[in-house]
Length: 242
Image 1: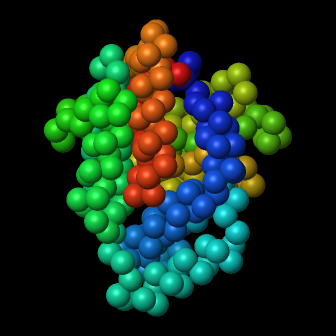
Image 2: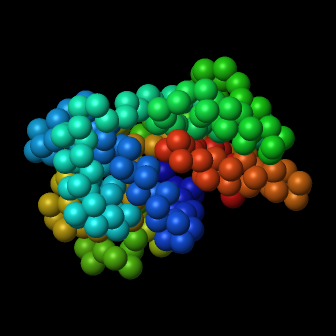
């Protein structure tokens, strides 16, 4: 795989989130709560929780905040129950958008997501209308500036741990796994002390759509900004070639 390393995009997102850390911490806090509820509060016996903790650390979430979130989720049986919902739809010029949400109020979330699409000239579609255009994969991005290891050695560690693909991009390394092998590969890299700019199971587009008109770009950004501002929205995937 080559070409579409999203490292610049990740850096941009991180910088944006540094100005509003509350948003990313809210997202991760909900993921911690769901992971604890599903598999217990001990990361040693809960791989999903280990993955969320790794994501939290990659986003500079303080350890005491992480531990507090785990304790709160484990100790409060009556805590808010979050339901996971996925929305699929279209942005300008047929761009495909997938929105994952964790919510305690499905009506509110559905209304907000629909509103975001409408204001950007898009529309929410039926389940499955665009997800077939994406592949669900584990994706690990490593900033070359943060990694002293030789590319071949790094590739061998990743492949030996079960990675599907390794790409040496201009400013980063991109490692692709199946969703099932993601935790094993991430933990193998972690054991070697490798710093990861991003490590998550994501939806990777099979093809990208280029937006040429200023109006389409403005509308697409409007949809993405509105979704980004919604606390119920956990992640947004799209095939716009930014």
